[in-house]
Each structure stands twice: as C-alpha cells, then as structure tokens.
Length: 213
Image 1 (spheres, one colour):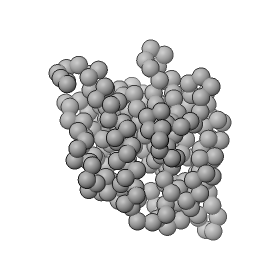
Image 2 (cartoon, helix red, strand yellow):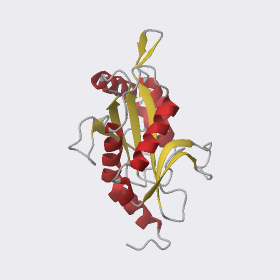
Image 3 (cartoon, one colour):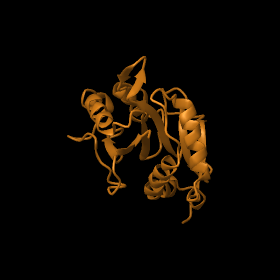
Image 4 (cartoon, helix red, strand yellow):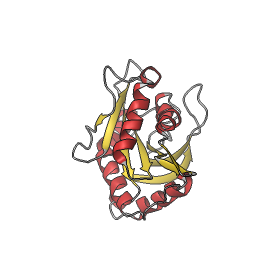
C-alpha cells in the first residue's frame, strides 16, 4: 500500500486496523491487576498504556502508542485535546490516529457508588463528536473502567445518558449503543454512530466496558 500524499490511504489503513487495536486493548486489559473501587483515572491509564506497549501483539501493528498526546492543530473552534491514549500510524501527518478516551464508571466514593455515565458522555464521547479528537478520521474509542465490575449497570447508565443527549451527540438515525460491527464476537464491546458532517460517512465510536476485577 502506498501512502504518498493521499490521505484516503491513511484513513483506510486506520480503518483496517481497528479490529486489531480493539483486540490489543482487550488483551492488555486482561493482563492488568485488579483495581480498587476508587482507583484514579490517570494512574490506571498509565498502567494500561504500559501493558499495551508490552503486549506481544503490539509489535505487529503499524502504530506508535502514546499517552496524553496533544494534536497541535485541532478542528476549527476547538481547544487542543490531551488524548488519553493514541495509536498513531507511521505517516507524516499528526491528524491521523485512533484515539482511546478512558473514563471511570461505577466508582465508590465515601461509601456511595456513582455511575458517572453522564460524565462518560459529556467529558468523553462529546470530544469526538465536537471534533476535539479525531477530526480527520472515521473511528475512535471509549474505554470504561468499571470499578465495581457491574458491567451491566455501567452499560445501562451510559445508554441512558446517551439517550438523554441524542441531539448533542448527533446520533445517526434511530441508533444508540449497539453491538460493535467491528468486533461483533467480543462481549461488552459496543459502538455508536454519529453524523459529524453530512458530506462524509458516519463516525463510529467503539465502546469497551472493562471490569476492574
């Protein structure tokens, strides 16, 4: 495949690698130690990034794995976004990458559980929809750290938050959180389709809900 100066080829490369990226994330998560009910987001993401880099399958993917990467030229009107984890192909353009945004779900604080489904949507998903992340690409990812391991409750919480903000999220047609079309065989991997620009295909956001134990 020649990448020359044709951005479409770079997009096609990323699209073709999304299933393998998701498998790598799932594999690396399985190697993570159990998390406490009040685990913090940044240390968890740092540990996950190290696990991703050490995973034996990462060497076979044509990506560099970075943490807290900043895109220097974000979409017009958007602030620079500091992405949790970015999978960047070896191409001379900073705008082409697969971004993984990580959020805590079902956190126990002072003896009470907070689902944080709303924050998952407003402080995570919205950044893709508003083009703060992934302005030039067609795929992105969300990883929910389900700290009490009640994945079913976390999914319900996020689904409810999505339904309440369908218009802001530019959800395509009658869709919502649905089984991933990219990795349909994987449990607890879903996707949402968003219309960011009527002139281009739907932006697909993959959602992985990962139990902490």
